[in-house]
Amino acid sequence: MTSTWIKAALLTSLVSMASGVLAQDVQPESEADLLIWTDKTTLEYMKFAASEFNKDFNYDVQFTFRGLAPMDAASRMIQDGGSARVADVAEIEHDLLGRLVVAGGVMENLVSADDISRSFMPSAVTASQYKGVSYGFPVSFSTLALFYNKDLLAEKPKTFEEIIDFSSNFNDYKENRYGLLWDVQNYYESRMFLTLYGAYEFGKNGTDAKDLGINSALAQKGLYAMKALRKANSSNPSDMRNPQVRRGLFNEGKVAAIIDGPWAIQGYNNSGINYGVAPIPTLDGKHPRTFSTVREAVVSSYSQYPRAAQLFASYISSDEMLMKRYEMTKAIPPVSALMEKIMKKTDEATYAIITQGFSSDAMPSIPEMGYLWSPMASAITAMWVNDQQPKQVLDHAKKIIEEQIAFQE
Image (cartoon, rainbow, N blue to C red; front, side, top):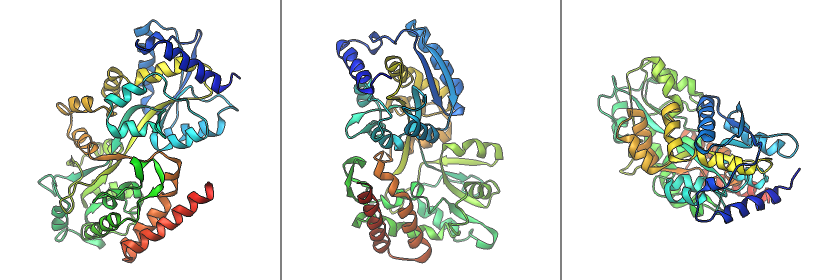
């Protein structure tokens, strides 16, 4: 097998020679045959994109498609790269990028990194990079929003305090009736409160593992502010870990508002509930910053056709194809200009998610992020259920996370 370094050098050379001209001046390898991994819901779009790719540039690249969940795709690329054929182009969630890079599984973006830096939303740019080097080709993003029952809350909630006030005459633990639900123990969903006053996970926009900020004074203040929401969410968080339980109660009209993501929209539509969607409300006058997840295409370091793979990954992250993807799948493009264009004529849910997207931070994609989930879940649970102090639980979480990071070094 040709050395990965030789392939990368070859493509770098080609791009250098094409300096000042369009990426398509770099041609695919003759008889290129690309294997594409993408989510099953995106297969039809990807087949369309492949056809248009060949048509637009008069290429004759062959394609094979396989529906594979992004997490499974990343795992396969890490485990099987070099020993079995993996996708030439795969779509992953960005928080796994760091692990892929460290494992040597993905190739640097050598054709459109500058374009991405110029036109994509900042969180998507950050999500596509590892240690300042661009690897990913962002294709969509998602974040959390507030879904609310219009028959219970006549007005779109703008503050969490409004929901707390409503809950005082609505909540009934025995009847499983709550003003607000979310997966309290899941740091992905509760993170917005810990960072309410400006705290962060890792310094330098999530890239500095040596600067762990989860127990700062600002983080403690945010976690303390989250306590006020127990009046609205008086459920047992362990009982509400299952999303189907939470969504089922919402669909039955027993929950006035639920924090969820675009992945839940189809289920709510099928339930027939009269619901609306809003950006995450303010708490204590502050706009919570949710985590956002960026879907991105990556090119395998083991691809036998690196030029064709890079050109196709760049093509599906172009404005034209991102808009076509949105039309076919409702996946929101992580490009500010395109988001603003979509907002002028879209449904309420997409509008709310895009709006919240402007107040979101991409999950850190460094490998050390993997050590946060369990300790932070335990910290939040200890504060929420056992009424322990934020400083105590966050100091303990930081100690565990630092020990785990040090053990791996």
